[in-house]
Amino acid sequence: MLFPILVVLAAVDLSCGAMMEVLQSQTPTTYHHLDPTTGQLLTCNRCPPGHHMSAHCTATTQTVCTSCPSNHYTQYWNYLPKCLYCSTFCGEHQVVKEECSVLNDRVCECKGGYYWNADFCIRHTECPSGHGVKRRGTTETDTECEKCPQGSFSYNSPSRAPCVNHTDCASLGRKTVLSGTCWHDNLCALSCEELKDGGEFKLLRTFLPDFFAHHKMRVVKLRRLVWRLMASGEEQEHQEHHQHPPNSLSQSAQRGLLQGQVRDWIRDASEEDLRSLPEILRKIHIRV
Image (cartoon, rainbow, N blue to C red; front, side, top):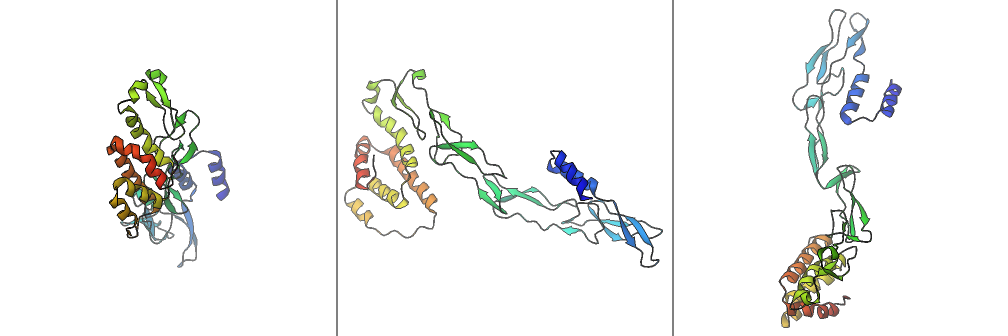
């Protein structure tokens, strides 16, 4: 009985719904029952999906079937004495794809941003700086990343988007003042005059967040940088030696929060503060 089913399944590309129909069509609709009173071997009708057998057939009556109660089901033609309990419950990072009914158990799937792996829902990989999404993750597969090819870059780190082409400065009537890499875009300016009177600091504010996102610092060093950016003079010395309580957040979460503080500082920093940044980086041994 199994071999014809395998042949059918191998020959046809079936959706889950279509596959279920094939399996149900291959399920026998009768069964043999030995009548305990007469000793006669009877051929009884099975009960349809959504029902169970409450009484075997006899020589004069057919099988008695009863509908499944709430939270119970049967999926195939059967002669079960009771319906099956809907025993599947969605776990962490799962959502209900199909609710329990008289015809099926509850079906769960991973929620958005997660995929199924070894009975667990795992968060999709976030592509690192300089890499973009080659193939988006699904509820069944992880995200596939690729390093951005020459002439393209990824906007964010970590990234959930494909690589995009560098801005063509010339097509905008501008000049390239800093060529793009796999982790930042071309920086364009109309002329050298535009870079005067604070124009270069506008470009710096665009470039620096990508710089810090790409050059992943250890959390300890990143925390020291934030202390130095946020404080000055005696405050720096005080914060450098201040013992902070242990943080229960993951290293990744801590890094994200600290990088957010760096971005805020870059956005609000004065030109004088930005000029002091290379010296601050040298003091905590970060090459620029």
